[in-house]
Image 1 (cartoon, rainbow, N blue to C red):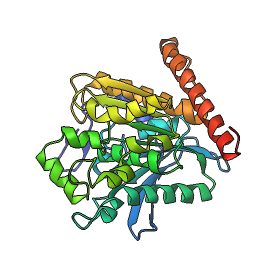
Image 2: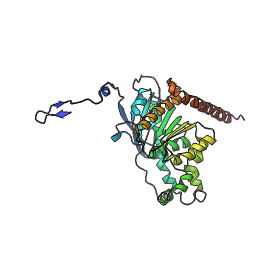
Image 3: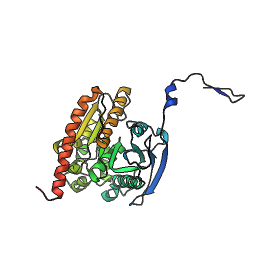
Image 4: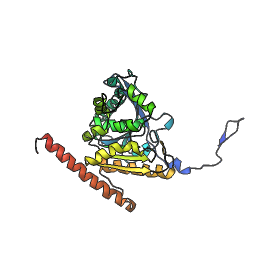
Length: 320
């Protein structure tokens, strides 16, 4: 762009991305509330691109900052393309988990609200959107990186409102991480009421917080796209779910750090994340022959899911 400072007129010198002018984007609307713990929350809600009044849509939650300097692009870490989700028939909730909740050092019951309170707010937001008739509360997905990844793991292991999940590496809130972490982290754990060996006096608190130790409660299929530098943090939950024969898939990206920045990797993750939610929340498959192997694996995961659901239903009805 070139501006004439005397007249204020602007002239276009070159349009490097002319196709952008043809893109259709969904508008974002801010929603907010106060949860059962008295904590305020807000999020930006994006309707499906071709939204039809009266139709209920599956919902995808992105975390952990809502819009702001990320322009509602792909959530923290930019692995979850909000407008692409919307173009594929999903409603999207870009949820802001806020800053860590204040707690009394050493008091586990106040520290755990760092995870419990935002997850309660997400569930409240889902209920609110379902009440409007726009969102189908039986088809909800959740995503996250870093603190958002912690939210993913806590939500699927401590609540039942999520039906499919994707994380950008592990949340690392488990005893395994305690043993590989340094003294700085040990101090943080102590402040959270998790000081000392996990088998010691903090054992009961670890059992409450840790997603791997609550893996038997997880019903949502989980996809993990992890950097190779952080894959050890993802393994406890991945292995736990594999041992329990729950649907889970892990991809490891070489040469990546906390936020993945290689364009090829980012594009591949974008595509897989869209495919994962289309498969689990809409029952759709991409007919691209290059993805045939992917769906062979995922159909086998769906068989595991159906078997687990049948077992859970039988248990509720008192059948052996």
